[in-house]
Amino acid sequence: MHIHYLQHAAFEGLGCIADWIDVKGHTVSATKCYEDASFPDPQNVNMLIVMGGPMGVYDEKTYPWLAAEKTFIRAAIDAGKPVLGICLGAQLIAAALGARVYRNGQKEIGWFPAQLSEELAPAEATVFHWHGDTFDLPENAVHLGSTAVTPNQAFRIGEKVFALQFHFEVTPAAVESMIQHCGDELTPGEFVQPAAEMRAGAHYCAATNAWMFELLNRMEKLV
Image (cartoon, rainbow, N blue to C red; front, top):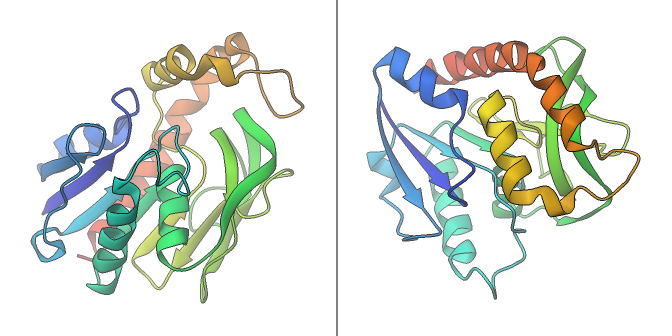
């Protein structure tokens, strides 16, 4: 199987997804939008993964490739490819399917509990968040998760498209990388943890990475 992923910032990579790809022996390619935003023919991709990033889906004036990226994501979905979006990637899927993406009432940064569908994890799971935007559910979406501050945390379209606002994929190194590159966002707030608390929560990675693997295994069977 060939996996293509879209990366929006050098410091925000695949995390544990890279380990899953290695274990499975799949081939992988990438569009690193911050270097060269050229996209492959969706027919040449078996699975698409859309990663997070510090920009918003509406920032097309600053990042003009966002328009082409949304068109590519929609084409992959229309071609029947399994598609996984994480954080910004989830927002891009929502936008590509015509849903509204906008500023959330509060930022949500750190390890916080989420109420999730059993499709993803136990009913209440502590997961890693780093986002200030949210989205409405696209038409025909199945709602899969929420938190106290973000009612729409995850959704599924059909059987093959999954959008997760949170980060199942983070490793301790990935958490540290986000802290180092986006630490200016850690302003005091009810749902913003200090860096030390986020680092202390890295023990949650083992569980969230296992849930990531389970979801990827499920999507692999849909290719």
